[in-house]
Image (cartoon, rainbow, N blue to C red; front, side):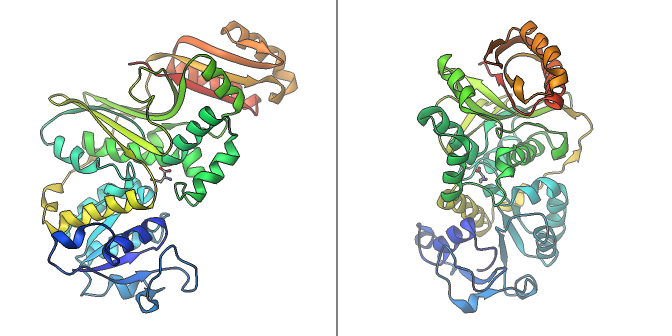
Length: 408
Ligand code: HSE
């Protein structure tokens, strides 16, 4: 089987090592010869994470997409375009496509699945969610048996690494972000990680598959962790809580509630033990009950392992069962349930004219003032009221952080 590789970054290099350099056990189990025929790169002279013969590299996508001898495309390049056009072209040309690019999958899942069905080829994306955790395949399998009622998870290795390091080693946000980038966890533009958009895409993909609805990413209420500071983690430690960036969705009678927010968990919570770049995905089926999947959420080998598991499904001819019709999602929004929330506002970062009003309002909510840092838990407030409060405070103040208390 001949493979075309689009992109040679962290995941592409990991896939190359497995297929061409015998890293892993693939060749022991498959008699068929597997070769990476050609690799699309942007710049022929760039230094690569892996050594590759020069004659395999090309900057011309047509040399791969229009080559009839190539059966499978591994699209491991980031960004929307040209990734979307290349995937469509490959599917239309009758090639199986495997991708780890969650941005392009989240925005075009329905389209890609339809094109794949038309050409009777596979469109697989295990590496797009949860890094090395096999989650897409079990979810697709279980949804044929179970009604999936809810999904919950920690879906970003970079932010979980940052939060763990800040909590455990008293490190500052920027230092740990640089470390996550050096380890190959972070996206090329780390805003996707720290502002929550990477998680937004992942929970949209999982929820679309689980509930059979094409859930648009812009319907996912999303907060990131960019504004967390040492004064927040100090507070959490003093209360024996840990902080995680959590994604959640639930479906009832066709209505989907879905959100991404920093959350506080105590040591008895199943997410408390998920540290550093590990991820967890839980889903609840009406027959299976809750199923938890835990493992490395980012990094070269785990993500390449997930990408190659898709390749194995093609080799095993297991992809036929993947036809998933996605209905237009008509009723999608954030949750309205009442929760407890942590809030911290640095009053000196607020507009001068609003400081007196805000200080009074924050004290009324039960926050305490320590040298103009207002901080504490707001109990039993409706999620929509909390969102309104945060939006009011954020209009006036530069430095705030909030997190939902997660129970259960
Ligand atoms: N930047 C992503 C993360 C990579 O940190 O989880 C894996 O999707």
